[in-house]
Image (cartoon, rainbow, N blue to C red; front, side, top):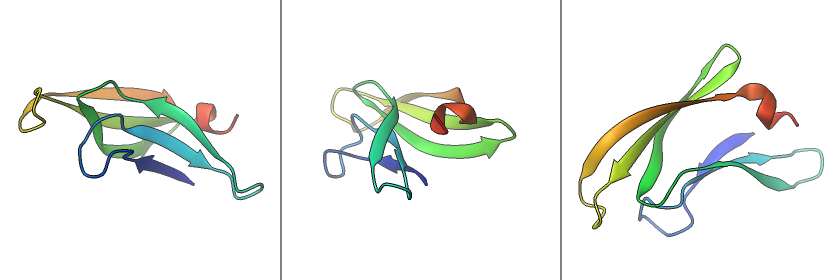
Length: 78
């Protein structure tokens, strides 16, 4: 299972992409965005996971830019 988790309530900072193992009930961090960013969307595209990453201003009130990142799905199977 792949999921996105926010560690600080509703403030979109320090967002992580986590993998939960059904085999041993463990959680492992596989991807983390920088401060003042959050993962706003993700799509599975053939052999990659495409992430949409928004960067916020200092007060987390306005999105300054949106970028994409591609992560190979094999990274989540390791």
